[in-house]
Image 1: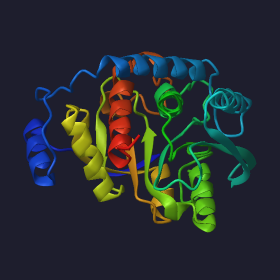
Image 2: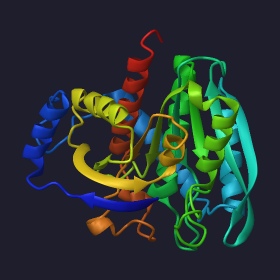
Image 3: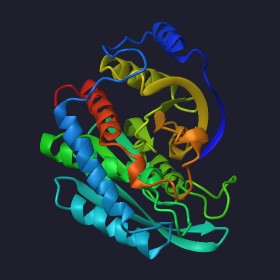
Length: 312
C-alpha cells in the first residue's frame, strides 16, 4: 500500500471526544487513551491468529510469484477446504515491470453465492520482495486474521460472508499507476463484469492490523458511511483508542472495489514503529505483534457482521 498524505491530530484525546460527538459515535467504557480488554473468547482467537502469523512467517519472504507464496496459498486452501465454505482459486497471470507473473486470489464463500447482502472481508497475503523481510504484520497479519475469521464463521454457521485473500498487493518494482494491487484489481473487474459487485453490501479490507500498539487510521479514501458505522461499533465496544480520529489517505486493495461502486473500507495501522520505521523492513517481525490487537479487530468485525445480519 502507499500512503498519499496524512494529517496527524493534535491534542488527540480531546479531539477523539469531539470527533465522536460530531460524527454521532457513542463513547465506549474504556478510559481515555486506552482500549477495553477484549472478551476472553476474542483473546483466545487473537492467540490463534498469532499462531497463523507464525506459520506464515516461517516460510520466509513471500513475494508474488515465489515458491514460498505458492506454499502459503496451498496452506490456506488446504485449511479452508476443511471448513463449510466453498473455496475458489482465482488464477491469473499479471503483466508486471519484471514480466509476466502467475498469481492467485483465494475466495472463501460461506453460504450460497446468491445470498444477499454479501459482505466481503479481504486482505492481501503476499509480501514485498526482500530476502530478509518476513512480513509478520504486512502480509502476515491480514492473512492470519482471515484464517481465524474463517474458523469462527464455520463454527457460527454464518452465511452471506466471503473472505478474499489477495495476491500481488505489493509493488513488484515500485508503486506507480499500475505496479500494485494486482489481485484486487483483477477480482474487482471480474465481479463488476459478472454482477457480483452489485450484490456486495460492504467490503472491509484489513492490512497491518497486528501491531501491538494498535492505531487504526481514519482512512480518507474509504466509504464515509461505512467508516462511520464501523467506528461507531468500535467505540461502543470500548475500542475508541485503537480506532483513532487520525485522518490519512492510503492507496490499498479497497480502492479497487470503490472504483466499481462497492462501499469499501480500509482498516490499516500505518503507524508501525517509531515514525513507521518497521514498515517494509526486517523489523516487521513477530515480536512486534500482539494477540490483543488481533482480538480487537476481530471483535469489531464480528460485531459489524452481527449488525448487518442480526438473524444469524
